[in-house]
Image (cartoon, rainbow, N blue to C red; front, side, top):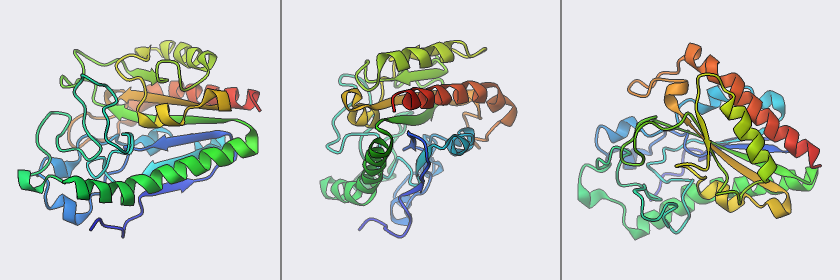
Length: 271
């Protein structure tokens, strides 16, 4: 049975019409799962490291903040509950991943790979509570303010041949190819990102937004969702021990804050 002794997420309720979601920031592995993983996998290298620290300005803006505690190796909160591919025809990792971003096996023994029953159990225990909280908070924000903006925060190594050729742009904004938020907001965010000195930016490039962005963004209901996938080299070490680098982070954090502030200003203008 899945471990239910560790909270699935942490949540801070804010006062502004903005919710920041961090579905891949968790590092916790339930012992029964950790015991089945390879030594490499137990290092959880594919974590979106240090995002709560990088977004440390968000509480002062009044944002609500939802942060996963469990590793994406337990269950991927940014995948559809049926495990359908977000990028058909491209290499992807699943709802309950079986391999790393480097395409190495997570499980030391192939017999330990979770079957359908275990996947269903993990979805129920870990995936569903996070999404229930996300849904409830978005609905509360929209009820209170008449508008809600969801900012789905991510980071990834800048070079990952399995998923993309060459080096990834630093600031990758995704809006479900224009379906998850107002087009004017998307263009404003892209303008801020492109003006970030020393950093590159793109809108709906390799990353167009995962399940959370695509599923919860409903511009016709005044719920606008944006995903930002940042290169980790913009603020941290991309290899063990995955340290946060304050001097490096200080160069990108002001631009990040300007983007989040622009998303909030957009929401306030729609009240």
